[in-house]
Length: 113
Length: 113
Image (cartoon, rainbow over all chains, first blue to last red; front, side, top):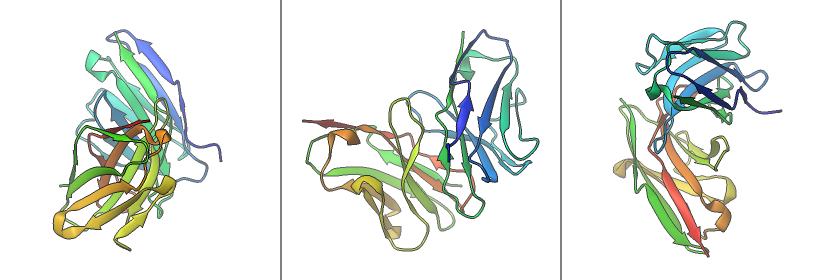
């Protein structure tokens, strides 16, 4: 069990650029979650998948954000036309369907200049 | 709708003293409640969770929390603080197992010698 991994760990980009983050969940975990955490705040839910199906999206997830989990394993989160307000830590978590115990990855820190 | 309020953004204790971190929740259904800890540059780690079994929940590292429905509270305690307990602590609620977590804003615990 290698835990949840996220790549990259840090990303610096210029406003208006597109960025993509990857999350690899724990093997056999069929639920995968994305959260965003800004300085001084708790994580905010963005979206989650059960296998390849996206079951819920937060209102925080604007049209510039898109997440996929095409084969029910890893997931990607893309942000188009980044804005300075997108600067945050993006967290991924995974869990087994019935267990509910979410294991979090170390996060990807995004800085938009 | 569910929400979580953590009273006190910063708590300071001396090593060996009682740790008390406060969490109040709002939920229209019987909640699932969680405490997570976040160490610098590390992912969120589950301390303990309440899922409608015993009201007193024991977690890792000597922490425990008591679910009090009448007070809508789920405060986290530890009898004797250790320097290694210094971290950010988050209380979270979800409406059922495996669904999105709603986090509080967090409480930073400082431990002095």
